[in-house]
Image (tube, rainbow, N blue to C red; front, side, top):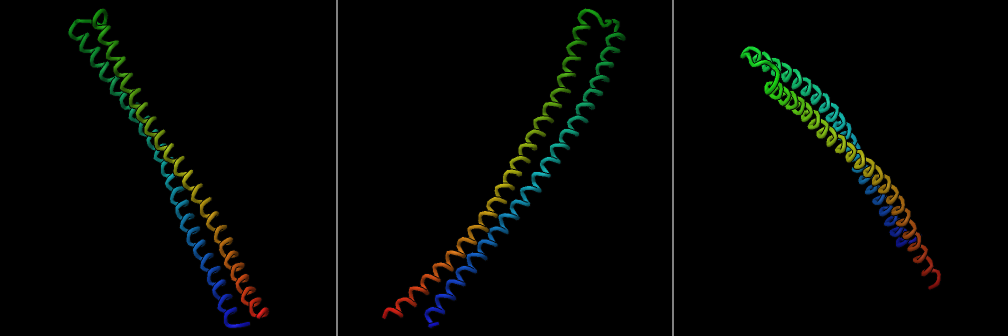
Length: 167
C-alpha cells in the first residue's frame, strides 16, 4: 500500500469518525432537549391540577362568604322591620344572583388557567417527541455520513491504485 493510499484511508476513516462523533453529539443534545421538554410537560400538568384544586377551594370560600353576607343582609332587613318580601325580596334575589355569579367566575377563571397549563403541557410533549425524532434522525444521518466517507475514501484509493496500475 502506497503512502497516498494510506493517506486516503486515514482521511476517510477520520471523516467517518468525525461524522459519527458529530451525530452522537447532536443526538445527545436533542435527547437532552426531549428530556427537558418532557419534564416541563409533567410540571405543566401538575400546575393544571394545582390550579383546579386552588380554584375549587376559592369557589367554596366565596360561596361561604356569600352565604354569610346574605344572612347578614336578611338579618339587617328583618331587624329594620322591612321584612324579606316585596322590594326586599328583589334585593335579596339580586344579591343571591351576584353571589352565585362571583363563585362561577372564580370557577371559570380557574378552568381557563388550568386548560392553558394543560395545553402548555401538550406542547411540551410534542416538543419532546420532535426532539427524540430529531435525535434518531441525527444518528441515522451520522451513520450515512460515515458510510459515505468510507465509500468515498475507498473509491479514491481504488482510483489511486488504478491509476498506478494503468501507468
